Length: 224
Image (cartoon, rainbow, N blue to C red; front, side):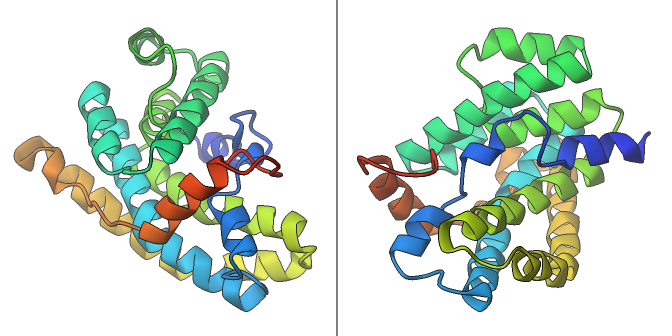
């Protein structure tokens, strides 16, 4: 297992398409819910403990070898917003392309054939981690970091927020990231006995509503 592979997978410059998505931050900025580093921290914490936890558990389960088709259906059931489903599959398709080029594997090839328009991104992330020789903990940590780093980076552009302040928000959330990743892995390890119903289904209604509204904007900086 290579920790360097985890750094590559979690790197914002990995060509997985995440830079084009704000994780709901653009809609939250317009709605006045993110106005400063302090409100960005609140937004990221809420996102981490809801959609971040769900994504981390799906990724961890995929890394443990759970059937990706079953996990993709579970991801769909946990994503009420059609706009977010579309975004998750677009990100999944791009991550599949990047992962197959970086860590070729039969599992990624099968996934690409099964979901030509893209599987949900967390499911692909777990298989990418598995193909890179990483474990469930690594996949979960990657997912929880993505759940907050995307909005933080987007807010720097949307509000001209000091990047030092945005990075400080992420650093202060580190203990929460560790706790949520651990919760996600524990849930994923229950799947062989209890099925995908053991995975968390925490909801974030404002993110879902904001995503639908954002998708209808005629002009926007980010895809989601």
